[in-house]
Amino acid sequence: MKKALLALAIAAASCGGSGGIGAMSCSLGSSATSAPQAGSPLPAAIVEPYLKIHDGLADDSIDNLRQNAGEIATAASALGAPAMKIDTAALQLAAAADLAQARDRFGALSDAIVTYMKGLKLAAPEGVRTAYCPMAQRPWLQKGDALANPYYGKEMPTCGEFR
Image (tube, rainbow, N blue to C red):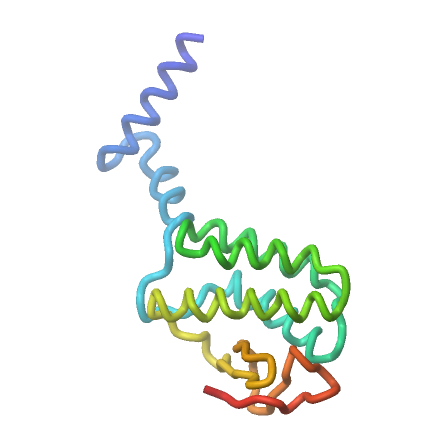
């Protein structure tokens, strides 16, 4: 028991200094819970599953919605408090019961992501653009030059504009 407490004390003390036994693990832990720097792109761990959800909704599908929304929630929780709204919105999206509810909750997630990007002055990853649907009054991120509206899907795929 004394050896375990001593090891914990050494590890904790080394986090406060420069170097030591636990320094590498301490620096890894702190970077995993920090927001990206201004000017950098939105993390791929959020963008990639988000784009998969977007593509599905634009195609009137919620296949793999839960898995991708869960990946976003996990990635957002690692970014700390500034990304809490993304985490919450992703968890709510993961619980969507049908396509209509998924689209509504995707709007909340998109709002949270766009607000996060603006607040931290983050760039969209290369090839990813922000679009806006005036009918749904919601933004979204997507790849490509042709609009693919996730809020109306196949019914009105080109409703909206790039911003």
